[in-house]
Length: 587
Image (cartoon, rainbow, N blue to C red; front, side):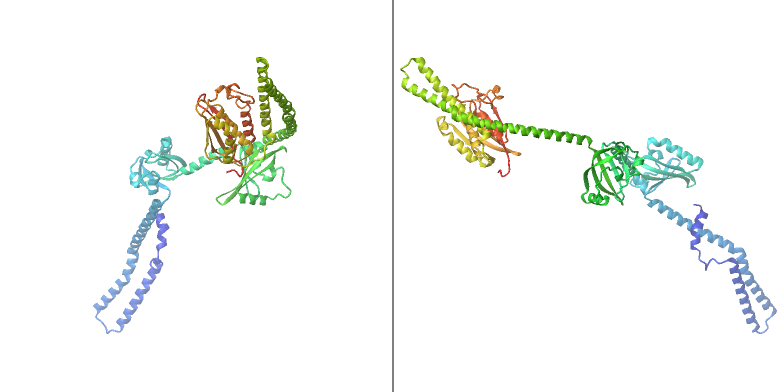
């Protein structure tokens, strides 16, 4: 702005009509004043007695001077006074304008700097903060290229050349600056040429756009993620249902271009809508719940449809609200569900068939148990009884071979009876079990120890336990379980007295029980078949038994929904573990 422009802009505002009159009006006022004054003097002189001639000449000269002096002043000195006054007013207006401009520059939120001959000669406080300086003085005198990123040196040099040589304003650009701490910022720069202290200079306005760049980068990343999503994404107007934005997957899955979809509404792509469907109620439900997941069918451009699962959410950005729908093609899932349903139906049918077969097998097993307990054992008892009678009556009266044969028959029938009884016990675990009820394992343990009292006393064994919990189970079967495991610990002993210890610990949703002994241990090669029927590590002469006890234990544990296994080392004892799940009402 020139000095004349400043005067024009600000000087006229302070002119007062009472002071700055029109020159002609002022001249008329002065003339009238002189005439009135002279008339009054003439009247006054007429009242006086006649005066000497020289006094009259003196008075006339004085009146003439009084008349001519204002006129001479007006025409000779008044223009000079007016010129000085106007110049003073223009200077005041210019100082006021400069002060306003200075405050505007200093208080501007944008960074403003001036550089001349490649050096920074002025920078405001916002510029100092932007470039990492505590005050503007740290930047004064610095080379302009010290704060411009090297990638933009040539661009800035060319812009400065255009402003210096051609005197024109260069367009707005984005570039990078280096702060005093070495960090780099993105900035938007406007530059204009002007004169500073009689030298060619450039005024630069710098706006930090680092956060905007980061936001744009995040937006690009977000857009890239959306466009790469395997789900179709729709941004809709919650008032009208019009589609406002879509990603690439939405276009490919429906067969429309983005521009076509932006001219459509949600209802145009939804193939199945209930007769009583209300878009307003739907949006209100989404707003109330935050999001809604539902299934539907989308219609492609060619008229075909496919099933989708849609997750709809409501969001507000600034003063605008949107519904965002993420639609996933669930065609394959529906096919898998249909295949699974068919497989389930087939499995259910097979289960029913197997259940019927199992029922028949159980009935046959019951029949076998009845036969084993009555029809088979009766002749076996008869053989055993007559053989024992034969032994008592004729032992020693026959030859030695006959006595041995009789002993073999008695021993064989006794073992046969024991095996039949154990097989019956094994079969009855699944068919004669009682309903589960809350069972105190302290009482169960005591009963098992009582049942083994004779064996414990004969072997001078010690049986101990830690506190045991209550479980939901069949008390009779758990007694048999403890009894078999404790009995094994006593039977398979070393020379020292047997010691069996029982304890339990809670692990997540099950109880883990341990039965630890100090016996002879189990060889590793027997672990695989340890819980199978009739499996023995030692001969009957070394350790009597049928080899069914551990198989019964396994069946009892499995009926209770648990697992059983063993850890052992030959010569250092064994530990048998089994689990029972935690069920309702269990402590």
